[in-house]
Length: 164
Image (cartoon, rainbow, N blue to C red):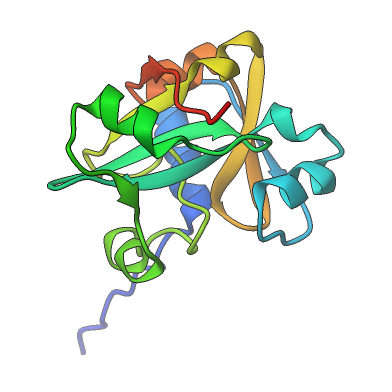
């Protein structure tokens, strides 16, 4: 009698780790208490908020864009609009996020780890860091990666995105 093959879906953090391994990028996957914000993630990891990056999903007229900024900062939508050359830029809502990124926990979408062709922008403030910590697709795991490797692995453009 034939048996049915079942595959266990990979978690968001497994997708991130797989993508980094495939790209031969060194990283450290860190388990921590469950958090709901980048600032609380920093506290759980015992680091300052500016050492943690958060990925904010922006929506233009025709695409999603991942903006990676320090946890201690906010995205300036006017700056993002100018950088993207878009007439309208807004934050994606929870329904849109859940539909576009079902492989990741809501609010924990990383800039790498999946097959979405989203454009990625990394705030220039992160370039001063040797490495950065960011959520790895779940609220209880973070990934530490060299900043240069993050830029390369995500095929990101650098931009001034943060509110002053």
